[in-house]
Length: 312
Image 1 (spheres, helix red, strand yellow):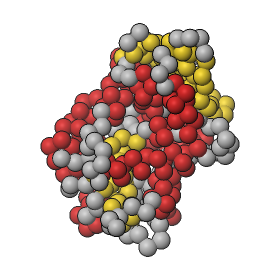
Image 2 (cartoon, rainbow, N blue to C red):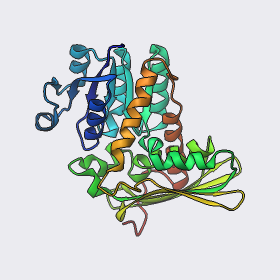
Image 3 (cartoon, helix red, strand yellow):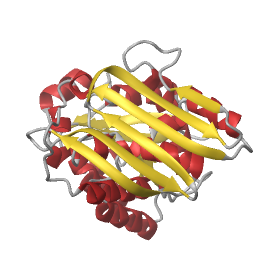
């Protein structure tokens, strides 16, 4: 029997609990260290018996993990991933891979240089309803696609207020939720390009709502993002060439708050372990591709710094 991969986790914010639970459930993975620069958060969320650190470099040097999960704020993804890759660890990083396409390309190059796995966690890929939709679409040409990713961000961010800081988040809903939605488009349709984008921002410059139109070949995909939505709606609708309309509600059957994430992150780590053990590709073009589409959306909308009238 193969020994488990020794995993370090960097960042113990609101998403980390899903990773930690998935790690506990995965027989091939063992959490050997965790890190958060806030000592109070570390004391509250560190799993029993697992060493804790407030400096990820010290964690890398002392624990020497085989793999690292990065679930820290978006603005430090690139630096932490680069340090882990240089230490020879396989890396699973929460989306987005980095703050922009340039950082993403640099990380992909560093991973190739070190022969290391760099994997972006697009957790909606592993949603059971998305899997059903993809199976139903097998062999059926798609005519049009819509992805909706709507939520009230304050309810989901909790104490992680960095989501509402455009410099740390990367912009707002386009930078943070956009990658998940754009990845679903490319998962179904293949490589895409942004065709148009409209973004509404609040007074601080944070994206609150956006409509981004992608095109994959002849197929148009509409992505609707909202951080001011009363409630939560995460779904995909596909119209096929024969006129059928297929739908996947990513929250279906899991009515609890964030309940769908438990099974999705189990899928993320199963895929990551497979890659880290050499049973799948080390390279992961999905992470940089999502950043490319984020960058295109911002350029089409006139940049990240512009605040539009009427933003909510």
